[in-house]
Image (cartoon, rainbow, N blue to C red; front, side):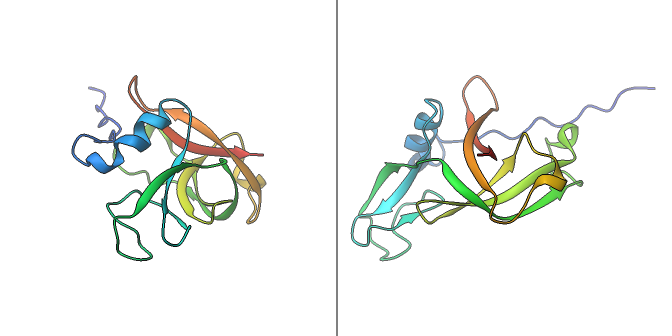
Length: 139
């Protein structure tokens, strides 16, 4: 019997979405960047061309503290393509101190140990030689 070949895990494509290049460059240095609207002072996630608050392109990159709390979470048992070998895995919405919510994997905790409001800190999952990906673990 032939072993079924699993699809590779999808990788980011910052060259196609040039506005995300600063994010990926910083991630590879172990820094989590967010965009901040210069008019309102509010951060936004995910990276985009303009402010979600004003519609203007008056945004800047700022470094996140990497600290937050679990807003919501799930145990994924039906993985999307490229994640089959990882299932089951924990996925959470993390509310960062900067006021944005980021969808990411949780590591170094069992499902029964996850709680809404649980403090978490940033860690990095290495996807390839080129990419670090933000993830979180208990603080």
